[in-house]
Amino acid sequence: MMMHKLTRFPSGKFPQQLLTGDPIIDAYLKSLDLELAGSKKVRADTLQEVSEHLLDHKAKLEKQGQHEDSAAHQAVSSFGEVAMHGREQRRELSRSFFKKFFIMGSGFATLMFFIQGFSNEGLVSEWRVWAVMFAFNFLLFGALMSFWSTFMLAGDRSDSSWSSANKAETELKVYSGRSSKWAAIFLVIVMSALSGLFLAGLLGYGLMQNTWIGASLLLVIVGIRNALAALTAWTRYRLSPSSFYICSVWGKTEIPRSQITDIRRLPIWMSLVRISMGWQYLLCWCDDNGQKKQKVVAINDEMKHSNQLLAVLNDDVIVNKSNTPAES
Image 1: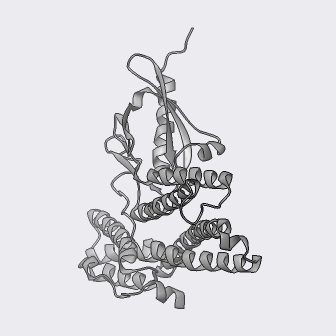
Image 2: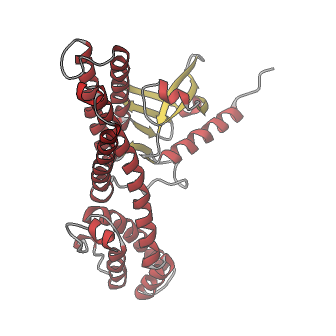
Image 3: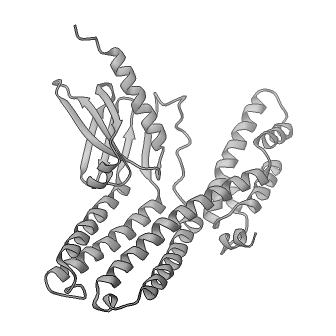
């Protein structure tokens, strides 16, 4: 419970701008807010989604002839207990916290381990010193960064207007949230610094000039590769009723959905070879001249609506294959 209160720092008060004017729904939202973890902005995102759902359900019940208070009571009752939804939100944030804690902590600790190990002082250090420094960097940096990005930084709101019921008439946008972009910025800075440090060593300058040439060259390549791969956070996909758009820092591609012939996930080892982050999917289509084209699409779990995008693209492949006449 102490950890729950700590995550609500610096303001544990209910966001007054979320009041709906309905006393029954407002009382439910205030009770739910007490069960939620995270900063005021993080909690406001969850409360906003719940508020929209309750008001929509209430409006439907009123159209069916129910009284306003009765409709509000039924909408709140059918949504479930606040304690249950609070546990679900805290559990989801906790999973995200520990995932980021391991990734960020281990990444930073490993980077510092290499820098220390390849320096002149590091070569003569005892293994106990290395172990203590690795644990310190892992725990401190991992805890601070994961806590901030999970409980303090609010993510982008999902586009609740898109659903399978109206996907034929509306657009689907797939993108990375603010927390993912902040993490990518950090990765670009750290990996660029790592490459620059060991590149200077290869040229005979700086702290790493006495490092083994092979190790320095490897770390320069790894740093550049990871810095460029982090730019995947700025890749956006847009699915319109007729076309699939790929927008990245490298350019923009438009693919007619009616011409998509296949999409399949590439082997995991190709994720290490190609400069991008996430699962690699090979998208195949034919242009207006009948020429076959293909493009690798990187999709990761941090992207909003990534699952819906894959489902729609797979549906397009099935529909297009069924509409293609069999070759005699």
